[in-house]
Image (cartoon, rainbow, N blue to C red; front, side, top):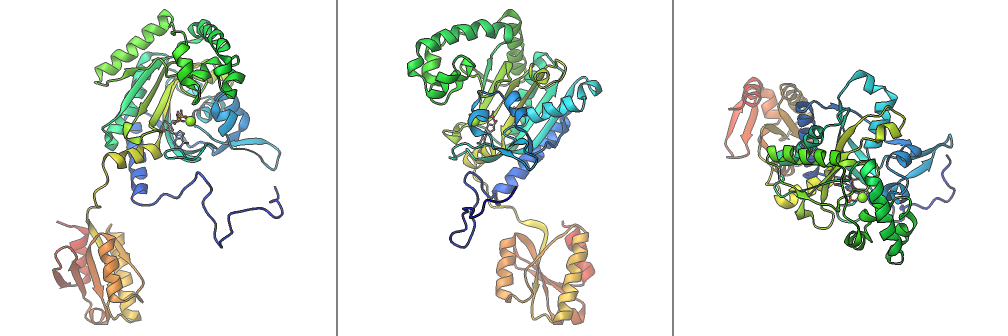
Length: 432
Ligand code: ATP
Ligand code: MG
């Protein structure tokens, strides 16, 4: 594809800017992303989930079919583009459709009765950027295939909860609902459609268009949900769905999880059946949902596989990290015990080589060694050493080189000692 001649870009003041809705993530935020991902991976292993890396883009049709044609994600938020082969592709707006596509494509149902997968992946949605809502954001998602029972639902909800707890979030709300199966949803859909038809003039343009194709979506509409919910008929679950929902609740109770039954929770994606849930963090204010999920028993079949029950969730890493910062701002990072900053003091080329070699040997022993440029002033190097968080400064100059010594300065208490390189190695590689 050729770039458009005379293409407009943000290079107006002699620099580029990150695209609206995207951002760079720096320390100390980035460490929290890594910590959350590590917790998710640790718990995934503990609960028997294997990691899957999904492609960044897929055929647009996969999401249209999988997520649902009348959902906000597909109707308004998807980054769709045509590639050089004139294929309609989309940057993934969520992970479940891709995981299901892979499950079907790779015949995973034949390999494992109960298949459990998780992913850590960035998602792309062309939404209006605001606090907690980005156009590129990260999700961690877990999916269980092949288990129709309530235990699988309770298990994934408990797993999501455990991830948040391990990460250190304490103020969380769990909302739970059942949106039934196709049998009990059918009559409800009809009743809701009648109500919506009666209030059509009060509905937004989207809801006016979709109230027949997908009336349940109006319950989740950002503009109309309140008035629709006020008039919507009560949902009557069939006996089997009622029993399922009851067991999920009992199992959650058995793990000590408290939840709120929220009959208005329908979730923004079409593929859910029976259990749906959301976890939110009140400290976040308006965009407070940190995790959403539920059962999607019809999706594997809808995407060309054999009828396979499934359940899962996705959590929004960016919001979770933000919630953690709001609940408890991070303390200053602890001193790095096994770290030294190499400071060159009147060092000629040979002394620099000597220090460079020692740094390399220390790193091979697992010690962190930071340094700046040997051409920086001593004052500047010491300032950088202080900022680095290293416990020690390794001071090396021509004098140290000629005597094959090192001046080791403890930056915490300012004590110092002249040591041989071997003594430095022993002291730093095995701190007391
Ligand atoms: P919302 O109601 O906030 O729009 P959603 O129902 O669209 O959320 P899901 O598709 O269920 O969200 O995604 C799961 C989680 O991913 C959300 O609970 C949220 O934490 C996060 N998330 C969704 N969209 C965004 C976004 N644009 N920016 C940052 N995080 C997001
Ligand atoms: Mg959304």
